Length: 146
Image (cartoon, rainbow, N blue to C red; front, side, top):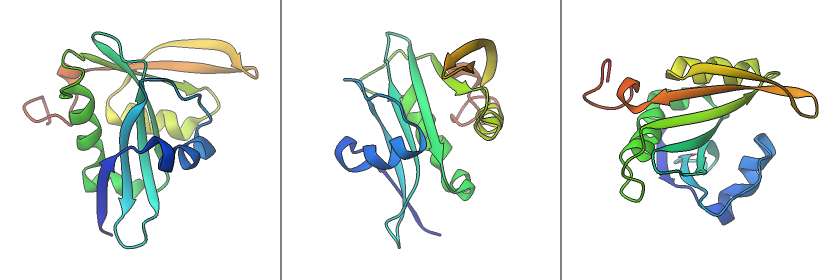
């Protein structure tokens, strides 16, 4: 497999992303798209939104787990924590529906820590709220395990 990482294109990539994660697009939505270089098929997307002065919300969709071996996670967290437009990001956070064990496992393996579980919500499904501090991110060079 040969993978190309490119900037998320809201016009071209949004429909694919929302088939897997039906969120609402906001004004500051940006991210990274991983594409199979041979077929052009989208393999994964991270969408970042709700950028605050020191934090950002992440939405990660992976349809081929092999993407993790092709630098996708390093690209995500370099984009999030070393972004020129958002220089002071120290915390990434995410909301995982309580009925999505696969996503919860992935995000915890990446290094996020669960801080709270919210009952109810999206059609009666709750959310796990998870965070990742920049200093603890194993995908950044210079950090522990990075």
